[in-house]
Length: 246
Image (cartoon, rainbow, N blue to C red):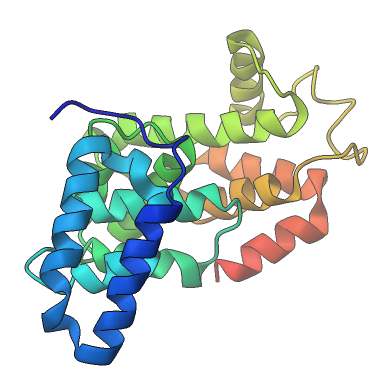
């Protein structure tokens, strides 16, 4: 079965099937529906990988993970893509991803590396949780050498998200300029007239960028400086995002 991107396909009919199974579970118990629920998820995931995330109620993922149908990396990737796409995350929303992954960093890494996982929002969530679970929770200060490429990718995504607050189509040179400025703790020349002058920016994207960067800001000067820039871009919105991550 070849891969098919279902991200632009209406998932209403499939979601209704899942909701019918959820209602049946509530009436008759999990044992009576888990196989049908698991087969439907596996069929969708085998065909479309993470792009099916909008078709699957989050309750289905947390339910199946407790059964023999559980697929920790796949389900964590789907869950992360769905909540990342909502544009606003909190520790309450992120905890189920960690639970689905069994609180194992290797499952979060595998979820990030899954073939067909092209959702940048979901990847941002997964990398933030990977470093949080492996380092922040265990009070480790320095990432292991093998994790440095992942940390660079995490920083890259944070830079991309911040850049997109001000420029709808950020060319590579602009992102390079922003990345270098963030590494030095400075506001790049092309951003200086904008940041802190209250141009209209996406509140949801600002909160997402601030919250997911803040989760591991002690691991990276770039992430720390992204959080600082977010405070300049919108102090109240950023403070709200940081509070929800506590």
